[in-house]
Image (cartoon, rainbow, N blue to C red; front, side, top):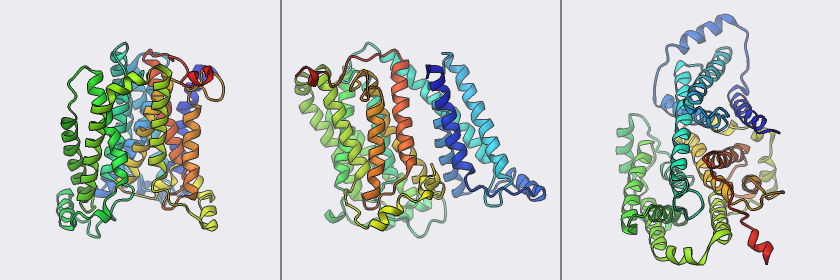
Length: 430
């Protein structure tokens, strides 16, 4: 395929995923009278907390469309592509909502059209700003071959999503009426004392890279990187995120805040002590290989925690049922912040890997070239969910991961970066 054909395939592929996710089980009804009533209701929506969460999900989903549209542009006219991406988001959303008017089980709304269009605009504009930042950093000092801002920012965003909606956090409070302030008050009332038995110790490993990467970022930019300052900033963000978690209707989990703050501080301290020695010890392809292996191990930790095997063969077979193979179907059944932020988190986790593979592919040619190692990793991670307790096999996760890989790779390449060499080159030499 030519580059133009690949870019078009990426655009139409994303559109197909959106249509599949939004129009599956539509239960189309040709009753024009009922459709007319639903159309009138679509322009007179009643807004509530459920609509806010649904709007957040729509924004995230269509932000991906805007991002894909800009990175696959061949014209180079970023402003024009942002406008086109926004119009495509508007047209696609209007089409979906128009078809949902003929569905007795779906609810069409002008609010959805608005949030979808806004999402496409934000995604396109956000990627355009990201490309501009990466272009500005080209030629500057870099520990990883790409601006550390790209890696640190994406990983910190994924960690923030985890703090807001933890995968294995406490169950939602039974009382959810009232606004965010009322939910926060209830969450503070439900907060229990810090107990060692309930500490999410695995978060220590998940959040430590945040501190490490931001100390690396500061040093890369020639600033005095005091790990205590990084830890303090991390503590503030962890506290704000936990309060946001409470506003979403979950008990405040002080133990989680403590572990996450300790993780960021530990990572910052480790970078402060070890980074000078590591930069001398690891150079060129050796450093790239170490970074890729370390980040791959982090993705395994994120994807397969808590590493408890599922042994029931019937439960394993149920994971591969046909209904579990429809992209975005599982998230469509949930109307909560997790269903939106989980998509964003998965995307952000794989974006750094794609950006690093853009400049340090494992191989320049063959089966280990380009993004294939990342694609295989995403597939293995998702297949592993079949045999892990409290995890669910969902091809959506693999698709989102591949989108993150591709966006990271294309952003770096379109910013003028080229491969420095093969990350596995020294192994061949030996």
